[in-house]
Length: 234
Image (tube, rainbow, N blue to C red; front, side, top):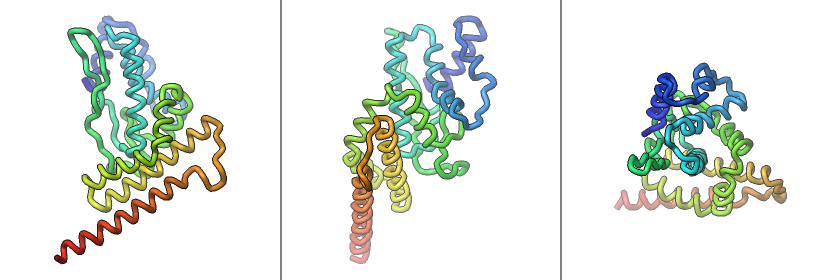
């Protein structure tokens, strides 16, 4: 089930009196005005849907919440621009009544015509991706702490791996644009991590590895263009 389908089911069950949930009261007349409270409510929307599902265990809810937050981090790092309720979901084992977070589908990383700057679509609203991460750090940090620590400790390796995948699947212009955004996004996560843990970076430090990575990627791109031109002339 994608979360759009789950939301429809939950609303139907509430209206029929089959389940009790305050989900409708919280979101029926919700209007987005770009406040911190709004961003919290947007992130929490899927969790409210999850908690309203009949027969779901607390253990499954906690596991799915962790995967859900990891999805938000993955989307931020890779510059995901469209993560609405209909492009992520759950798998339900009807025999055991166990619920699992589904593998991600409908990924879109490059651009959308109605979005500008740092905007992205999330859970049905046009959001500032950096503000979305700020609220995640402020309100759900214990849920993402281990994953953030892993990302910061392995940032160079992660960028290298993403670079390989992006280079194989994008044209040169989109590849360069995406990699620059990814490097900026990881730098922002590192900054938030340092602030949250009261780490004071040395002067001009903290992002040196990222700068070095940009230089390396630029050199690789130039070499690739030169080699391509030589092969073409041959």
